[in-house]
Image 1 (cartoon, helix red, strand yellow):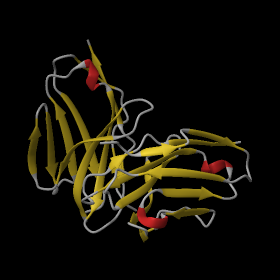
Image 2 (image 1 turned 60 degrees about the vertical axis):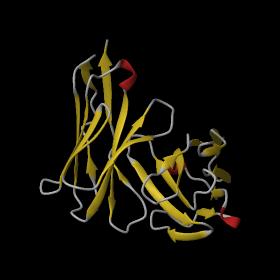
Image 3 (image 1 turned 90 degrees about the vertical axis):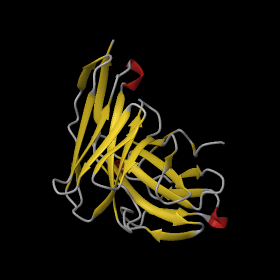
Amino acid sequence: EAGVTQFPSHSVIEKGQTVTLRCDPISGHDNLYWYRRVMGKEIKFLLHFVKESKQDESGMPNNRFLAERTGGTYSTLKVQPAELEDSGVYFCASSQDRVKQFFGPGTRLTVL
Amino acid sequence: QKEVEQNSGPLSVPEGAIASLNCTYSDQGSQSFFWYRQYSGKSPELIMFIYSNGDKEDGRFTAQLNKASQYVSLLIRDSQPSDSATYLCAAEEGGADGLTFGKGTHLIIQP
């Protein structure tokens, strides 16, 4: 069974540009989560989808971040416009039972 | 604000010994607790979860939970060099969506 995949693995952009991160969950997992780890800090929850619906987006930092999951399969997280403090590793996780969350390898975003 | 605290380490343990990793949490509403292992540059991998006070064993791993003290631990018996990694403790409040993570403890098993 394929695990959670994320694309790209690395992204380097300039401040003010737009970046879109993609996550493909494990097939059949209705629950999809986005997390972020800023350097030196702990992994922090951003939001949770159940199928295509946003269940909890309380962790989203501000309105420059937009997450979508059209069709309830893969999800995208767009940052527009990117700021320096957005740099970090963005993890996606999926779950079938809302207990065990399986993490992807992450996208390392660097904003210059 | 919910917090999960871990000693960042590094924690150095000789091969074959017991590695003991500790975690405390601030939110008394937390219901479930998770230990993830993360190798450098890789994704966090779930190795144990625990809901009830007491011990839960799975192979060489034992998770321990003490809700009165708001304390979670992970014991790794017969430590192997392949156990060298960062161990992340996470808590989930009942009904909440996301996990609250600690910063992780870097464990080094010395051959």
